[in-house]
Length: 122
Image (cartoon, rainbow, N blue to C red; front, side, top):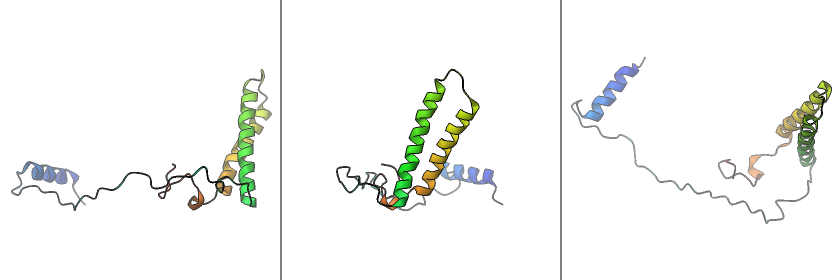
């Protein structure tokens, strides 16, 4: 088992130069990496915005439609004078089904124009 206190004290002595030897960093060379994004999504490309052509894409459109309907329904229910519990549960269930179905209908990240090569949203 490593005693962290002793390691901290040894590190401090090495940095102060009181351990008998001069402290020198033991790492290698520092490589300066480019931090700019190398992926530039081309939104003017008509191939990026084509109509759904597979069943999975149609289900994805349906999922987003359910989410949009649920959001609109939340606003409508919010302004009703009385909030029937069955209506709130129904709207919540539609929203949950829409969000969960996105996990099943989402494509892989390799074909997503909004992600860079590391999978980070652009």
